[in-house]
Amino acid sequence: MALLQINEPGQSTNPHEHRLAAGIDLGTTNSLVATVRSGEASVLPDEEGRSLLPSVVRFREKGDTQIGYPALAEMVNDPLNTISSAKRMIGRKTADIKTLRDHLPYHFDDESANVPRIITADGPRSAIEVSAEILTALKKRAEQALSGELAGVVITVPAYFDDAQRQATKDAARLAGLNVMRLLNEPTAAAVAYGLDEGSEGVYAIYDLGGGTFDISILRLNKGVFEVLATAGDSALGGDDMDRLIAEWILDEINQAELSTDNQFLRQVMVVARAAKEALTDNDSTVIKLTLPDGSTQTISLNRSRMNDIIAPVIDKTLLPCRRSLRDAGLDKTDIDGIVMVGGSTRVRSVQEKVETFYNRKLYTGVDPDQVVAIGAAIQADILIGNRATGDMLLLDVIPLSLGIEIMGGMVEKIIPRNATIPVTRAQEFTTYKDGQTAMSIHVLQGERELVTDCRSLARFELKGIPPMAAGSGRVKVSFQVDADGLLSVSAREATTGTETRVDVKPSYGLTDAEVEQMLRDSITHASDDIQARQLAEQRVEADRAISALENAMAIDGNTHLDDNERSALLECMEALGKIKEMDDADNIKQAINELNDLSEPFAARRMNASIQDAMAGHNINEFSE
Ligand code: ADP
Ligand code: MG
Image (cartoon, rainbow, N blue to C red; front, side):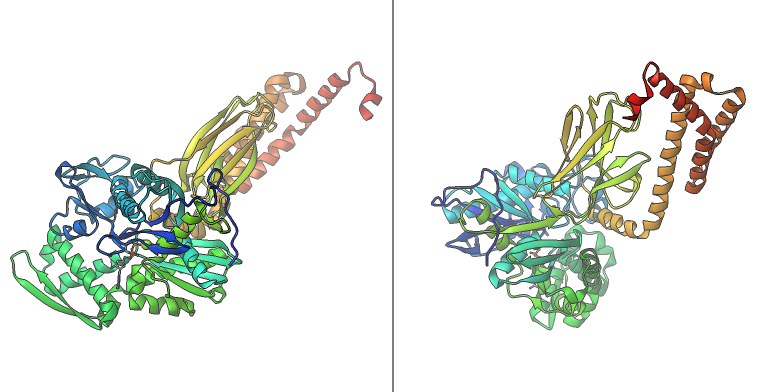
């Protein structure tokens, strides 16, 4: 199929020169690396022929670090030093992972730190460093298989990753010595792999349920253009949650509630729970064997229909984002042409059944659900590195939450709406609020609500050097730019002098998925509150403006144009407005502003006449009528 090229400045190469590029699926549970050879994308296996690298790292004394299967095997024996699911912590602040942390066996070094670190036998390690170890292992694997150095890679991230999580992933890649050409959303990568294989056109839902994350994206595939219409998901939902429910069931069955605080035993239960779940994909029933801390063994059996009941809440929970993505895309289930199933957990039979029933559409399960993301990333890497002279492809992704700035009255003016296609640049002009204002403070926010206090603060910066002008005549253009990796930079420019300033927005921590969910839910439930809050805030700003304008005018020539009665009437009216302004009724404030305007009208008229007379002094009326 014909695809349109993305032009990456400075990355075009001599067509005869083949450069090594790879696609990396940095998963919560498993990671993979793939590359394109002789026009075919394939996953690169390790020396033992295994394509998955478990995303587990065990830190031992003196830097003797184990990565992948050997580390996975030690999870039960050495839980404190063996770190899994680092992706759930990457780009998160200690406070953000509090609830997560309560379920983890690790010891964290500093409760107040911005970047949480786990204390290991080889010193404290952050999720970024853990991910860097995994990336380093994949880099080595690829360079050995391809006999050369990788010139560039594409790394996939969940579509729902926010700015901080994307930055942290890039930092991990930098630590691993990788040149990241692009961060690509996982479902988009799956579509790339799928679209190329099947030549499909139409609207597709990409349902990706892995070990720790769930993503749903709605993509339109048309003449080789992949357009993301909407994304939704939950970055703390996946196969691990099924394992946890099955583990709880096991603890119940063996009646050993007091063991639920024994970390080592719990890890064993989690491991057998996962094995039982995977076994029930191909078998109707399975036997679970456990060794208790006292050395005795216990055996219980589990059948598929019982397991289906146990894990049903996890699967049902994925259907909420499915609904929301349809609503965001303005589509109905019947508009979806097919569902692409991605991620190891889509092997679970009841996942397939429930998703098929929900959409009442055909499921595409032809591409290996473990490999599809890495393969799509490899294809994209091959294009970006310039190996495909005729490879034309355009990928369009979207931002998950609206971006805006704070305006007067504590309100947020949205500049880029949620689900806008990236890369995107949007600008908006703002005026100065006060006479002689020489600086403007820019507060960048993310979220769906109208008030600053309900959105997430991303950055603040100041534009200085605005020439002093009358209120409303200084014009400042604020531009938001989100690049293809979903990273934001903001600049502000004053029109008359061209004074400019910009920031790259790098928040020190990100939004938790729970916060993202909450913000979206709030924006729907609070829509009418928000409109009222906005009206109130607007009227308050208007009231302040009216009072300060009148105070100014009275200070300048109140003595000339007002008698005592008029002056005290105006002062009284101003004071009343000041009080009404503090109350929560926009209509009342508006009425009080109108009263003040009416009352001050004769004063304004006299000032106007006086200034016209001043201006006309010594001139002929005809000069002005031209
Ligand atoms: P991630 O994207 O989070 O790295 P994967 O896509 O590799 O995760 O999926 C890992 C999950 O898939 C795990 O929860 C694992 O138990 C589950 N899984 C893998 N194979 C099977 C199977 N045959 N049956 C059921 N679940 C499976
Ligand atoms: Mg995955």
